[in-house]
Structure formats: C-alpha cells, structure tokens
Length: 157
Image (tube, rainbow, N blue to C red):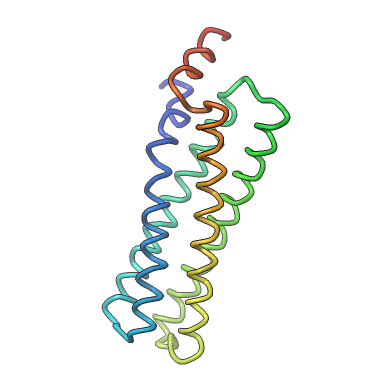
C-alpha cells in the first residue's frame, strides 16, 4: 500500500465530519428548541457517525502532515492551529456523544440537561468552523494537499 494513501484521502474524508457534525448541531438545536423528539434522536445518530468520521479525518490529517515536505514558519503556525482545533473537535465531540448516549439510555436527557446540549452544539459548530477555516487556509494560501505539491513531494523523495 502506498505510504501516502491516508494523506491523499484526507481532503475527501474531512468533508464528512464537517457535514455530519454541523448537521448534528442544527438538528440538536432545532429539536430541543421545538421539542421534536425525532430530530434529537436523529441528531444523536448523526453525532455518533460524525465522531467516527472525525477520527478518520484526524488520522488521515496526521498522515498528510508527515507526507508534506515544504513547511515554513507561517504554514506551520496555521497547521498548528488547524491541528489544535481538529483535536479539540474530535475529543469534545466524543465526550458529548458519550454523555448524550448515557443520558439518553438512562432516560435523563430532560430539562436543563437538554438545554446544555444547545450550548455544546454551538461549541461544536465553532470548532468545526475554526478547523475548516485553518484547513482551508493551508490549501488556498500554501497549496498543501494540491496536486502540484503532491508532485513536488514525489520529486524530492
């Protein structure tokens, strides 16, 4: 298997956690606000799938980092922010997913606990935005993950 396999998958994988975790947040907020049980149950399912997708995004992102050879001070700073937000997003989403599953299974997803998840959903949206913003900057400003840079990496090896 090619050593860059996961690195090349990163741009394709990352859109799944972005879409799933954003959709989770919207469904959770709307479901709680309008007291729609179907939406909050769907939100939980999408959150669980989004956490798995986020794990794939972080794993492939770490491989993409190690396969790129042309880091400078500015791109490294953006990368560090991107990694930080992605890692926070993964762990926070995993924690919220576990908490949400626990409360749902114990039938304690009620009252003020429900409304706390609106805050958690907004935090997840913020983390998704920041992760995507910094990841997008790595692509648009520094060309990381583009075909041109992939060819340059192969030529230098």
